[in-house]
Length: 414
Picture 1 (cartoon, rainbow, N blue to C red):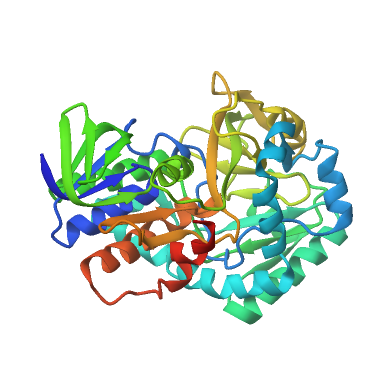
Picture 2 (picture 1 turned 90 degrees about the vertical axis):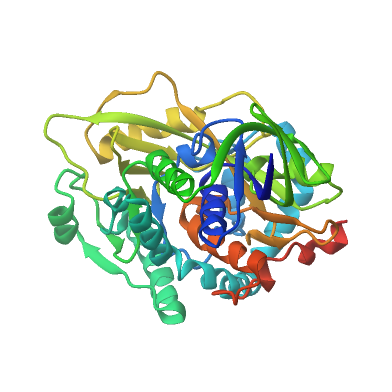
């Protein structure tokens, strides 16, 4: 079977790339080992973070680093063997998180972020999925004045530099918006320009169905069989295409390494569990407990509790200790009832050492393109990444300058 392009990976990024290419007249095959949206894109906080102009940095304060070293922090845990393996990545990540470097990175990152909500809304409208997007914003809540003041200073900086809107919430305003939250909270910050998603898997599925309605085809297949040509084996037979896109999320390192690219990549794992609310309790917004290291989000299935980051090998067994640690705290924030899932879900976030995704051509191989490394913002940046890469592949003028996201910035790594 012959196509113009084969897109490997049917998460949010791969599906959006496939849809945007198909819209532009390319005949596209989308290939994954599972149905669309059933790996990393399945389990996230459901945020489309218009405020996320600064990607998540590595902490640099000595106190925070010492706290993390004890491996008991609610927001970051690690496997000791993975720390040794990822030490070179973590060193580069730490260096790039220096405030001056981080600010420079944000200037490029913000060019993607500024289009995240508008591109999602446009694609959702075309896919008949607008009802899955909630234009209600999200919020952080605080238990101490120190945390409240520090986060407010950050919000003020983001507003000053990038016009990120925020609403400062005192205790009374917070209770008005979320009457079932803990009444001892001091206040919060609300980011009104961000959207949230009631079912991330359903959204990716809707985008994939739209891609198929445009004439694209989805195949169950094995990305590890990709070979020059570009050919890949699927359950329906071998697919050949003149171009290929690697959008395999956390599995992109395996594919890129096999093709001869040594890139500074790592994985942050995370967990979620759904709960029924107690009685008539209702959660209106996604809520981040800024000091507790977890987020509660109202989802179609129930209240989703999501954890922070776990540094571990890609295929290491689940160790949902963070979830167990934060669940009792989350129950004091909001009246959670029984668990609704048989076991915790685990996902893997694909990360680069400079916090910028890799989007663009793989220069060693004509016809090969990369789109991965979105870390915590894969759902946020899926549609704008899809549009940007499709514009590059079809020779259109690009909405965003793609140069900061080129794999060539890592040329010294091979």
